[in-house]
Length: 364
Image (cartoon, rainbow, N blue to C red; front, side, top):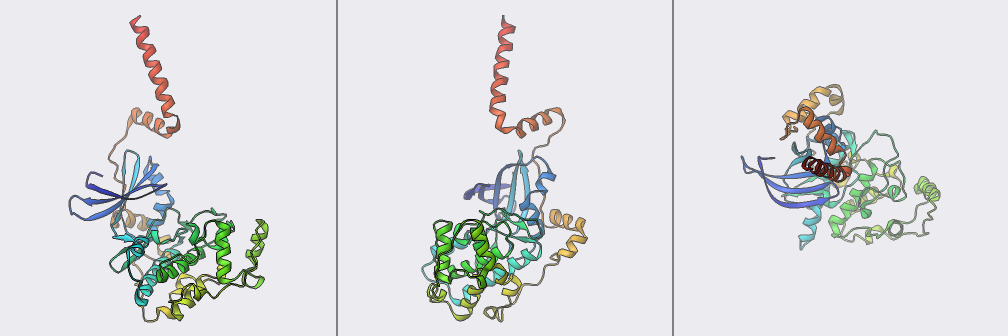
């Protein structure tokens, strides 16, 4: 990490901290995400979910670019391209609403990133405005710490994304959800781009479900039979509400915008469009899609596993650069102490006592 100068902290979470930094050689700004979790080997690094995901999707203009992985003193650092702000900050600081063209542009770019991510076999699970980074007219999906494989076996964790962007199946504690939770979140983000307010500002799971019911009507056997069974299994009873016209909550939305939001905010995940289907919606007529990346074919990646690893580590500069070299019995002893970190204080105390006893006996 010696080749970077840390400027200021720009984020913090349960994972660790994010810093704005400068490359000393080029003067380029980067964002460095420092994990709290200790990493002891290159193999352990490659097995992290976030690293696996980024190696598969690190080649799209609407996904934040990982430039390098670096290790120092058993800590892992993700070095990303630097973006000016996140979408939440952009909306909070604006004094006027986005134009229809701007809303369409943001949503089209997010959909392209999601489509690529889903096609590469991952879904995000935490798609919120704070995880969408903006520079000029470009928006990129970021923070893949909760991303999961599309083909992995459920059940999944129920409490993942921020409450106000959580899909109904997640609110009902289903462990069987899929990439359609990202599409629900996108529908809410799209509405928020128009109004600058969360569409369903619930304060808890029950309140969130109530606000959804009040807006789009309670689910029925026809609209979401599986959801009714899920609610029954968890002892939850949906309120009986016909719902208001969703357009009343987004009065400035045009017909095409409302049409897509209503599709994305379907109770039944199966009735929500995929990212690829949403890109074909009339709202985006005339928009030019980004060409498929050269290494963007999941089938090619699966066949050429060695080429993928080589591309990820070398061409994309995703490399582990340890600054501390460890060898011999001393390193093994240090590793042992570090791996038993919860007991390190106790071990140190015992070592000090034994050391004092030794010198007392020697002195006597």
